[in-house]
Length: 289
Length: 291
Image (tube, rainbow over all chains, first blue to last red; front, side, top):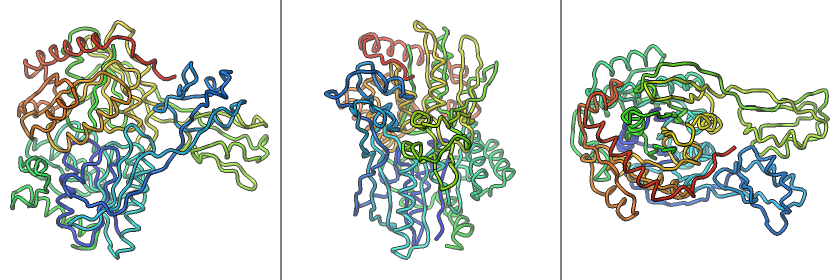
């Protein structure tokens, strides 16, 4: 079993559009959307939901006003400023540490588990897909990322599929760290801008830190060729493979608007380069296509 | 007044709007880069740096001399950051949320506090803009404490603070938006833009903040973002068509107000609309920043 995680560091570089193309090209593959905060892959691969599960994680304090004597201890203990002067818990600030519930002298605080979102196993034209939706303004996105990845692995084992393609989240923090643990390879989709380069460098620092082999490709490469070359150089200097330069193609946006993948629009130069990158990825990660 | 610039989807132009707004207004502004995982505002602002300091969080250490392995600290810790083994107590600092519960329940007074490096806070300025950036150490998962630290640097009340918030909809976004006066959501008229905008609007509604939209590259996709804004009664404060010169300036790290004079007008107009909305919304809703 091999898993490729597609990251970008910076949002909006075209990561999900590229994953949608890969999904159409791939065989014997489980798709996994690990961008649980703002998942978009479902908008182009049209999953038909087969299983739906609640995501229960963490806790949230609730003060029973009938028992509360307003002694004020919990206000002093709470390091997250989540308890108001009127002894109400602000759910958006509560981290579920349970200190108030455990120590309240009146036993007036409960700290039940909470449902932070949902996760799904679906059917798509390209094979099974595991994805999720984190509740609005919820926490524990890292845990949900780990969950969808391990479920993708389970689905792959059950169905005798050997490959997992994971669309990762932006950034370098908690959900990204959760998305690359034990992954076989990371592909970073960059763009030829100063921010694209800066964010790619931080992602490559992260993959080095966790010792995950990395490769880089540049999307919209012809919008700023020198910057694209600089990104290629830096990628190689950082020990990553450089897999290609995808030219800007307005059909990418068009395909998104039509809720389709670029493969449905004929052989454009961008699609050809994506196909070439996919072949290189297969060679590198999946022992051939 | 504190304006938070947020987006749901990454790459829509959040940092561009935050930086250009800060510079264009030609008045004292504090700009806080709260996108601590990928802090990019400095690439456009080119601030003169005045200093930086490491940022630590408190994590427990267990004094083996005093610890009697009773297990109370392990039991209260919801984050699996303490394990009591038959002969030794272990801590896992990277899992700790610094809630302090372990120290409160320890009857042997065996918990000591030590520091764990999470990132750094950098300060600088450019013209009338005071700039503060949080930069998460690569490999570190815990962004919210660093964001709270950066948020402490907001301008004194009468002055303007602009926050460049991270993308997404989870705790780093909530921490960046909590206690602000206005959420400026930057989006693009594509299905991904719309999907993530819907989620971002959900966060802003939960926080009960007034909000408005900037639709960037307003001519690239379709009209569904506009329809959504109308249905949800969210004012569209600015629409900017795709402009190759703007894209090139952005790629090079230039501020648009310096390259394209109409951006100065855009930003002045945008700020005027925000002030109107915040005034009509009234000051009562403002929440105190979290401790």
